[in-house]
Amino acid sequence: AAGLELFEREVRPLLLRECESCHGPKLQQGGLRVSDRAALLRGGSQGPALVPGDPQRSLLLKAVRHEGLRMPPARKLEPARIAALERWIRLGAPWTPARS
Image (tube, rainbow, N blue to C red; front, side):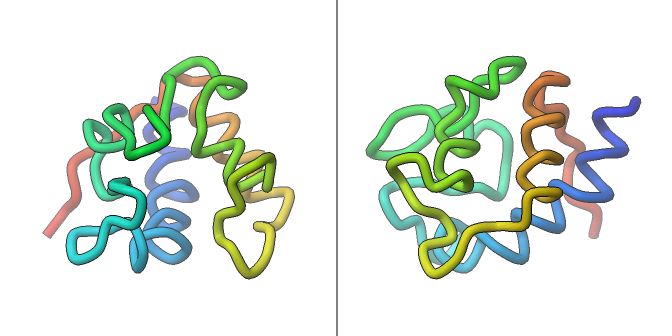
């Protein structure tokens, strides 16, 4: 339950605001889409973006930390947002379907 709350409160808004314009339904740079969990698990040209329970192996986290990949490319996310992503991944990256 805590992981789902974290996802809805912090992670989903972050993915929508910071990632979806380049990795969403209309455009998937590098073959990556962040709009659903299965797509993150598949990943893109660099491999799986998400390894639930293992932040160190999750390319999504490496990219927002600017470790090799740099996402978003123009600036690094605030430490609190990076920490929220790390917590969410450590909790198994739970995901609730989008609400209409």
